[in-house]
Image (cartoon, rainbow, N blue to C red; front, top):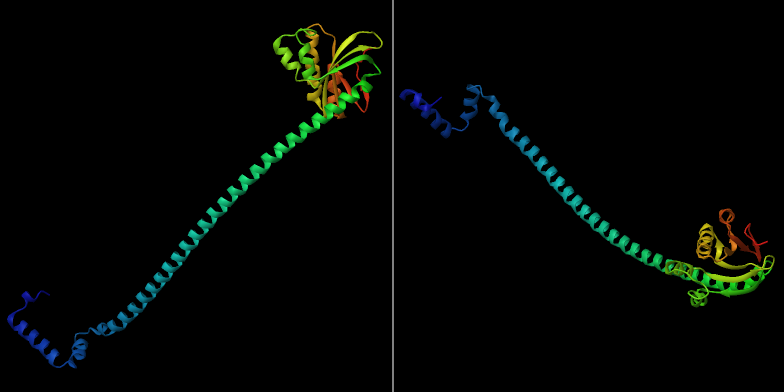
Length: 250
């Protein structure tokens, strides 16, 4: 109720009551009971309970904040460790790449050495290997053949360049027919299809220019596919000191 709506008599009575409650505090409880407002007695306890609940909430919030802070620190630490692990992995990968490149160079060098070694051995063995079918043999490598191109061998430039990639050449005469041949020899530790096809391709260059020629694939081992391909292309196979193939001169 708005105090302005009270009459003067009511205002005076209210003021006297307030003054009496101020002077005699022990009358306050009786006043509250008289006004049937007992619920006011429960307010202090409710405030204490509310205070306790609020404090619990604050404690939980503080704990949550601590947990969040710890989680953030752990996440930062995990991120740092992940970055370090990534850096280590990159460094290891870089070192592995370097090792792989070195191994690849070593393998190439070994392959070249093995190839050079096989060519030297093949050059020594060729007379014995070919001797059953050919005579008057002259053996050339690419450097020795080069001066003959344009004189003994008349080839166009492209064919001459391709021919000089062959390992060895043998100019020989068939013991049976007396026919002279150029033998284009591809030497490999293990003869594969590519070796057979190269021997055929380079012998075909000489044939194209009118020179009787045969391809020869020579090695310590020969794959079945290489033998089959040699039969298809008419390439001779030199292995274990023997020469075989359908194209052998008769």
